Image (cartoon, rainbow, N blue to C red; front, side, top):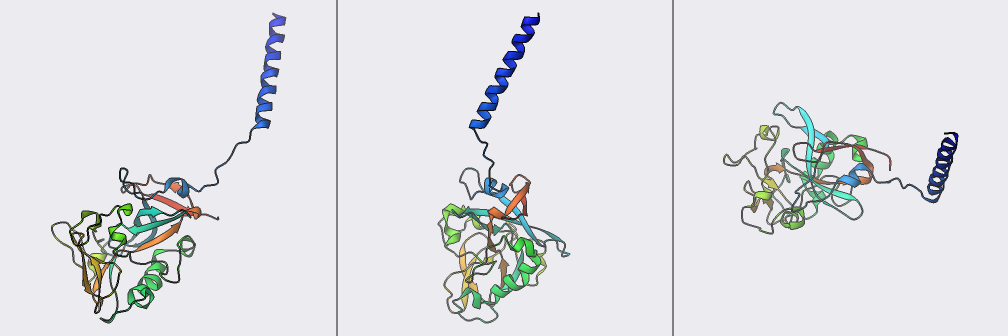
Length: 252
């Protein structure tokens, strides 16, 4: 009996020595990726979109604030996610005069989005994860070419109706005096960008077709932005339309 106990003790010592040697020979790598870098992807033809709540804006008809729901169109190699609001969140004028302005920053809507709406939408901390560019600012409209990009989940059709480009307005957006939506599908029209023509600008219609409207009209606001995924972690949600991801801004 005593010999058996000694043998067992010797075996345990050998096993502990072996495990220590293995531990010394190998190192455990801890991922340096944030939750957003691990989880967020662009559009996938089989899996569809990833959805994110980020920032806030009036949503209900009485002005009650709610998280802004974005769909992720794509993620660049340098880790920036291109987001598009899932809904038309407001109505606003593209430009105060019916004239051609070729620079995005020269239009009234640039200042509406980047001087007014973004102050409501993002805290100073949240804004640090939103890409700013001298050309576009923080918030901007997608171009018609973007709305024909199959990599973003759209079809290359231009004038034809396209369900993938249809967009419903929020209850708050519908309180605007110039708000309108189609009774058949509950969707509205919204401005996009492109080459202006005689004071007209591009739009996406209620059924997803492309057209133009005078740029001194109030049109639907469906804006885009880019988020730095390396600054977003502490995830909640599952990334679906019904249960979108939410992240905290963290230090790089």
